[in-house]
Image 1: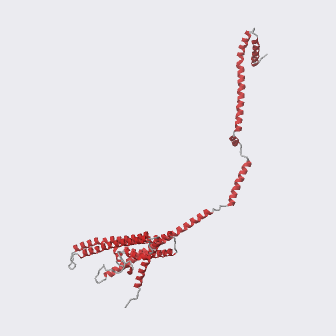
Image 2 (image 1 turned 120 degrees about the vertical axis):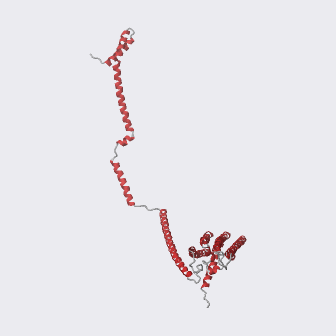
Image 3 (image 1 turned 45 degrees about the vertical axis):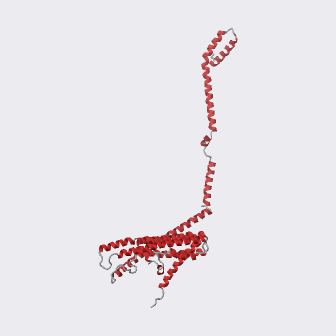
Amino acid sequence: MHVDPLLKGVGLGSSSGDRNNNTNNSNNSSSSNIQLGFDSPTSSSGVSNKRSSSEQQHQQQSTMMMELANPRTDLTSKPPEPDKVSKRESIRKGAASSSEHEGPKTPDPKTLRRLAQNREAARKSRLRKKAYVQQLESSRMKLNQLEHELQRARAQGMFFGGSGMLGDQSLPCGSGNLSTEAAVFDMEYGRWLEEHHRLMCELRAAVSEHLPESELRLYVDNCLGHYEEMMGLKSMVARADVFHLVSGIWKTPAERCFLWMGGFRPSDLLKMLVPQIEPLTEQQFLAMCSLQQSSQQAEDALTQGIEALHKSLSETIASGSLTTPTIMANYMGQMALAMNKLANLEGFVRQADNLRHQTLQQLHRILTTRQAARCFLAIGEYFHRLRALSSLWLARPKQE
């Protein structure tokens, strides 16, 4: 009869336990203990196999539980349902169709106003550019016309000068002796007079409308800047042809009667202005008197200087004998010395123009805005009447 080793070990273990209760059979218990120790490897291997299988089952169950608990595994493992896909496509198509039906959105009023302002600014910029191009073109045509007139005038001057009885080329023959710089200055001065007339009309309208001083000051500053522009033109021609300024050919005959070093006397102008801009405060009246006195002193100093220059120049030219034939070496030396002295004339004219400029600036600082506006109106009307007097004098009937 075959007995399972495991059962046998168990049975032997139980018999040995019974026998251990009996103190008389000690030898049988020791033999049974030896046999139990012999059969123990088989029983331990079976238990370990059962444990390993149970552990594998436990690991598989835990792995399945983790896979079920992981949401990523569920999302990735499950394919999208067709109902949800169809709903998404229908929503997308509906949004696209609704945007097509709605069309472009209407901008808000602020955006429309900004766009309108941008269009208006662009239009004005184009107009300014067009006007500037036209002005450049007209200036170019005027310069070309001036060059032709100068060439024709020079040809006529050379002809008349060469055909004279004395053959003196230095005699004035119309506009033939006019330098290029002087001709350009005369043309610019004519343009300056036209612009001056326009500014005076605008200033007179602003004064009659009783504009605020902040707005009226712009017109006054424009008039002052216009006179400063004239000073710049005179400075330009003084370097090239100072005699053109001093002679006053560019002025009308009546204006030449009051000409002083290429312009007006500041002291005479102040005497004319004081009654036109009254009433003055006491402080303003004292400032005007001080300005008039300082201008008169500066004029006297310049006048003495120019008189000393005239005397020195005359003595230089008259040195030596004027009746006997001159020696060429002495003659050229005298002319060189006279030319060096004559160069100082440009300095006197510049100082006189600076004095006129400073006088206008001092008036602008002493007077209020409305008084300064009346001041510039009075100056403009004064010289306008002098020009009108010249026109009337030249148009008067000639007496036989």
